[in-house]
Image (tube, rainbow, N blue to C red):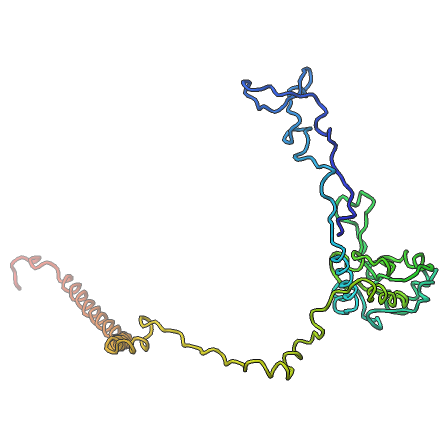
Length: 341
């Protein structure tokens, strides 16, 4: 629905085509893109017209006959407006939109019809402060910042959040009083705007109603007025409906939980599962496990015995080395000839 306020835009039909260019055809080892004719300048011989060329037109130039607006059925729009009005009375939805309503006495906020005769902005400011609604206006003031993008160069330089929506029945000066407050918008109850009631598609706008405007809703959506969407449930308390005697007397009793089964164990990895299938194989595996544990227990004793044997061998080896050294010191047998004495 927000698209219906757009204006058509398009590039010029002459853009990128304001030169005389013609393709050189085939046989000259160049692309067949149209080229600027003539000579004596760097422009001559350059490609033109194409979207890949410097100075050429864009791909698929935008046209003014694009489908800018969207048609919406009247009953559908009325349904949306009625739903958005109902959402303004739900504090949770109003707070979810970011409105500051902590100090508001009630939601929806309905004031006397004399509100419509407010003439000065100072009076409007005083009214909002007395109700605790001026916090929402201060939130809007603090949120003002420079727009991201090229819109800042197109007379829409700043953006800010939305504040309260003042709904009145007759304009006795209220428009002039409230229109200069940042973020505050006004709307006549006879012309309720969906884009104001649910900005950005988010329902729950903080609304301040005059008494006459609230009473006018009975006429607008009365028996002779617009039809309000029929509620699918007259009582929305689902837990109370389910637990009522009327429902519980006809429903089937609650079923017990599904039987839980133990997880199937793998006999290759589980001895207990193997014992159920093959007791002899399980006994053999247990015996092998016990033997392995016994070997692990005897490992320390075997290592100690081997180390002791190696130590004793080293001791005898040292004695042999000493004897060899002593024997080598006696010299040659025939060093003194054959004299025995």
